[in-house]
Image 1: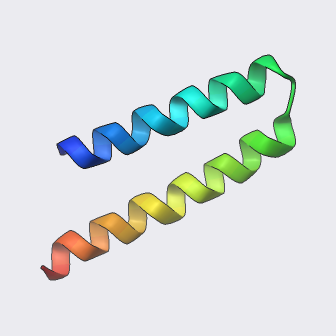
Image 2: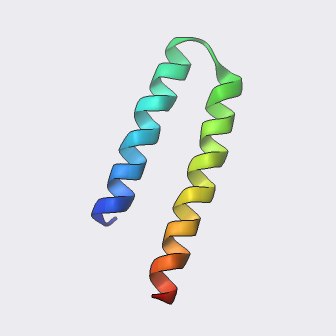
Length: 49
């Protein structure tokens, strides 16, 4: 994982942990979907660059 992907991952891990602590499983699902889309977008950008 490159630096930007690691930073993205860490960002979402912090947000998911906070959502879990607040018992916000709806937000956890939303964050998961957002993370997946953003990570995929970044991977595709780097593969075409």
